[in-house]
Length: 438
Image (cartoon, rainbow, N blue to C red; front, top):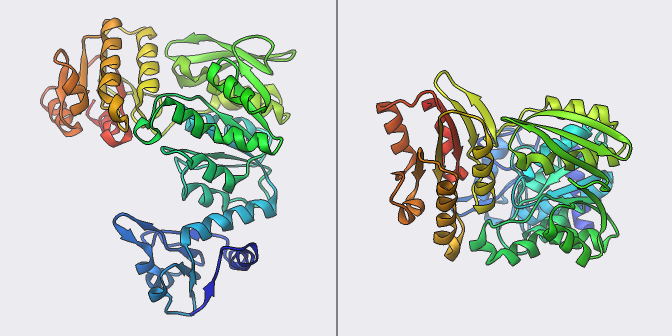
């Protein structure tokens, strides 16, 4: 049995020798990668250690396990903890390359902002950035281990739903710059309170301030400005007001937003393919970061104009029957209110909303669902379908469906046509399956 004790830098360096020979990571034998390193991960319903031999048989160069009974081959190596070994390996690799990294977190908009940052920076640089939503304790190290010498910059997204998780991730990423999109009411069950959200997201600012690094901060957010100043963070501000490093406003929003922005004496008007005025700070953040790294404003504007959102985040879809605004990946009180407010401003003759329950709100759940219902009534929406037990428990005036399957059955029996429809809910509600029925 070959054992690598990966709790010291010396032993991580030994592990890194394997990575230098086989610089691709595999964690799922259902998708084996030839000549890669397999790391056995564990979950509530699986134990990757049991698949180590299978990984070798399917073409992986080496497999790393953390249970001795599975280390029964020359190419199956034992470590103390596979997840920690992978995280330590990622940090070691990040330090070896020294690539400048921008870390991104926030309650809402962090994936869109990450995509916009990568798009704007990509106009002048070779950029590595988080793919999809790989922003957790496993996804972050896997992203870092994709860094290559050719990458000039990296944009790493970091997510959290419990206290301390951002600290864990920044200690792996060691970002040179950072950006918190916003702080809002989400994952309250895990964070305990809104103050818990701010404390955890603020762990990115904690790291940056401790290292004398800079943070890109939305100057329009009192919470973020207070959090940054309390920590003595060096600010690069963006926002609507003049005097920021980058300032701007929405010139048009029906339904796509057009943003005008200014950076010192340069100006640009950027027609985007983004839905919702709530995307203004995301666009300004991308302009701010890219200009800080000397990307010409004309290149930034052209890149952002060409960007098309995906992953069910504020996507405009026109079917043969309806116009859909699909925002079915994330739903919390802050993002739900923003989506409803924006939908109210869009010019359309026959509006309809299909909204799913918001999760992980703990004891605040009933009150937060009632606030959404109040907002619907305040804006005069009457064609509203609600999906899930949480909304049903608080309302008797709108149509209710227990599951998305019930919605599909209704749409099959009674097709909806000629409407502009906002589809908003968490990924768990699976409302993203509805467009094919609309």
